[in-house]
Image (cartoon, rainbow, N blue to C red; front, top):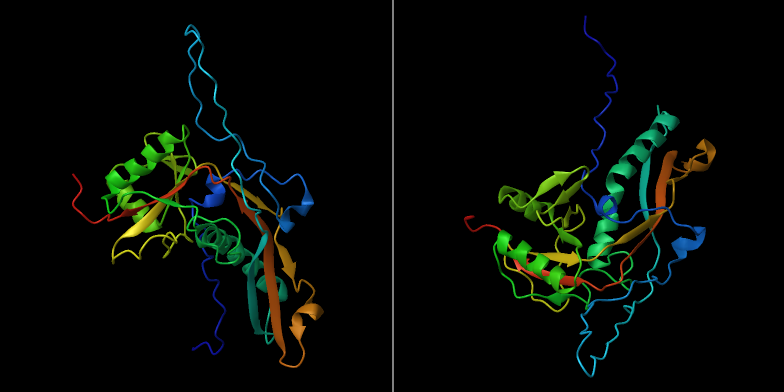
Length: 276
């Protein structure tokens, strides 16, 4: 006997990326709830540290370093808005699905802001005028080596930011290993293959040819976010538009992403040559 009623199938939930900027950054909770209004970063002293001769007469003069100067960082909101008809709708299940999708997608939006300032162009971001463009057009091994060499000139470790495509080439070249929820090079540099790290170049650089991409390196990054997503339209009556009989729900979360800019460099990589 044929079944006349079509059933609702439960779709597989969106899968959140494993390796994210938030997972690699300092994501400790903000101490002040006003963080979403943005602010200035309390930076650590910049490199370099230097040596001093004890026995020389007259003795060396000890030179000083300073703190990195930094523009203010703006807060921004990541959101997912969903509208559907109320006919046959399970309100609670729709909210659950919207929240699950938001939590899978939100990291890509945060990474896109940090990569090219899409939401808040005035906040410092990787591709802005502060980026040092290293001599590039290198294979994946030489490119990653150049980024780590740049970190060494700053006397610290940090993060390599690249597209998932470049990270796949780096893994194939034996450059990466997994440590918990992090990807690292043999030197311990964290590699962030951001879902939002796509299609951008340093402001001072030319657009890359097809197949080539820029990767960036920074020192540590701080990611602040509100403790829980906010669900707007949580009340059924609030969420329904009576004129169209549609149901709208918005899931959102406040963020600030900041770093002191002491390390900000980019290099052009051509990952396709045959690996040695």
